[in-house]
Image 1 (spheres, rainbow, N blue to C red):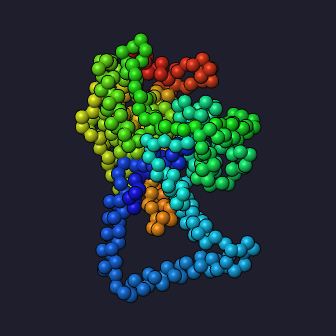
Image 2 (cartoon, helix red, strand yellow):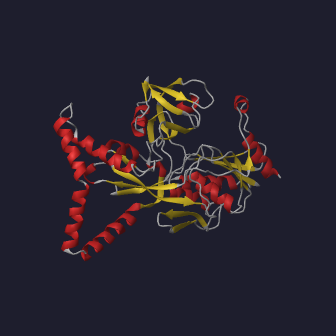
Image 3 (cartoon, rainbow, N blue to C red):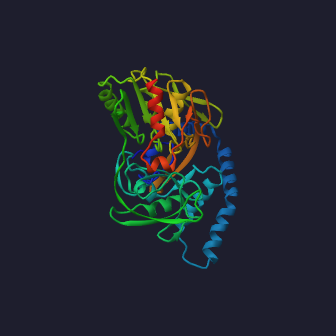
Amino acid sequence: MNKITKILLVIFAVAVIAVAAFSGGFLAANAYNALKSTASDSSAQLTPESTSDAAAARETLFAPFWQSWDIVHQIFVDQPVDDTKLMRGAIQGMLASLGDKHTTYMDPDELTQANISINGEYEGIGAWVDITGDYLVIVSPMPDSPAEKAGLKPDDLVVGIDGEDMTGIDGNIVLNKILGPAGTDVTLTIRRAGETADFDVKITRAHIVIPSVTGKMVENTSIAYVKIETFGDSTGQELETTLKKLLENNPTGMILDLRYNGGGLLTSAVDVASQFLPPNVVMYEQFGDGTLNELRGKAGGLALDLPLVVLVNDGTASASEIVAGAIQDYARGKLVGIQTYGKGSVQNWIELDNNQGAVRVTMARWLTPLKRQINELGLTPDFVVEITEENVKNNQDPQLDKAVELLSK
């Protein structure tokens, strides 16, 4: 595994624990190596006096930390204390002080699980989640997963697991408790908006294969339908294969379904957008100093001129918002559904030396081609269409129906 892992973009998934699933599109290694090179060049210009002064300043700055360390070792009631746990707690506290919920520390065990491939397999309940808040939040259950069959919904809060209160518990720990061998049960205590009281949901874990791309012709129409579940390593190639098969039917329009797509690799988002857009800017990365880095699509898209409608909802997040936002900005197609999740920042995971885990640091925010900010705002569809409980009970999909209506015109 590379010293520096891929840039991470998006929400964590029970599927793959925070997941390399949400990796961004370019390796951080180049940027990190450049940073080290710059630091090395700068160090070469430092005089012994300035180096000594910097070391002295750091020693002075950290004197209270080491004093506190010694006090804990001397008088804390439960001895011996766990030095490794103290060290990791110090890193967590340092990153938390930055006030950015996406800048975090992951210990070695969590890092191992996080590096499961986005297109891999795992055992759990099958749901995309956000672990960065006060409670673990269900972003969306995966189709046909135990989570979906148990009735979990977007924005459900997991406030307890197997009768244990999860208040104040780190999101990574909560996530680990939800995962487990296929065939075993886990009981989640759910807090749902509109419900007067928390309630328990018992779920039997299963072997989960993370989905990517499926396609078909909409029944009794000449309209093609493509569903992208996540943006993984092979999604671009899967989409290309799917499009080639669908185009053999000479469709008159296409529906791109990004509902409940929790995000994924930034490179995959660019690959997907390139199938529908000419090689223009797909998104911008905006760094702390205000500089912008543009990411452009690739030439040779298979569906550049086919009339297009994109389905979105509150489970559409991160990489899927990049694709939907670019399509909307270029007026390439219409967005149908409800407001998207609003995840618009890029994280860099840097693996620490000697197998001590990794730190995940927000390094940039991303903007649409028209430089719209998505973070905590989301995308507003061109046609807002809700799906009601009654629609669900009657197996109706008014959002899909609206897309068919628009393309039929």
